[in-house]
Image 1 (cartoon, protein in one colour):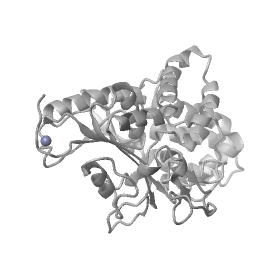
Image 2 (tube, protein in one colour; image 1 turned 60 degrees about the vertical axis):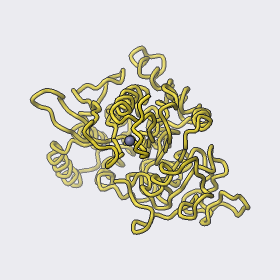
Image 3 (cartoon, protein in one colour; image 1 turned 180 degrees about the vertical axis):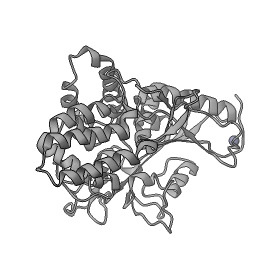
Image 4 (cartoon, protein in one colour; image 1 turned 90 degrees about the horizontal axis):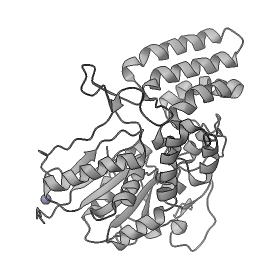
Length: 409
Ligand SMILES: [Zn+2]
């Protein structure tokens, strides 16, 4: 077996839902395209704003509002639609490429690109090819893998399918690997418009329209626009938390056209989401270093009728941490002598799958990604580190951009 011998660690990072994709690969129309089609964004937003202005003069018409909301969603995100089997309708893809000219001793981090709409297992198959090519190209036999957001679900599917032989470290950061309440609410139609103001400009812009559409005519908007857009993406099913899965699935079950989509969804749910602790324990037994990192201190996105809960602005802290007990937003847990209780009494990590390897960063936003300093420490340490090992990296940290904890991108 070859060995580079540089002593450094080759790193792979997987980002999540909503990044740029390639439209029309290999065709003259080839271009990068985002979650919202920026090229086609200005016109529909202007049109909608004019329509909102006009409709203020008229009595409120719920059906019309639902129709406008559907139109707007389609013009902004229609390019992402998939069919009932979870295949892209538009020629969109995101084939990975490996820059073999990259000097891993100078720049040890490699980004694995994938089409974030496809299921975690499909993406894991591509990730395996990527990791094999990377090991071949760098003469390393093991890598440090970081799964951020949806990337954590892909990393877990990789672990299930290809084992841990290539992994030296596995970091799940702001992860969707145990689902998120928001996705469960969407697929079980528990969405509404409530809760605290959110910081997303687009969401606040859409709020009156979506709110009107939901309050008066949720049906057409939900059935024709929102549901097909997200429920046809195999990836989205991996985000449905275990407690909502059966109900979400029931809506599509028994229809032949959805069989392939549901088979992909079931595979992640049964073999990864419900078996995550076992998979991670096996990896740990195989000497893989594990770290779970998540943010807290932000309210949930206000499209739910549920009471607001702690998130990293998107994903529930309780789920991303693999089972922490988290106080309801604005409340505190009762005092206890748990060694895993945060000083602010918002989190008790004792119920986590891996309380000793789970870190919480107060104020860290979803898009901040994992703390670079914490990640570097975990990756470079000789063996498994715990929350009790280093006073610079206690279990509970505060986001502080000028100090050790900084954003990933
Ligand atoms: Zn090397």
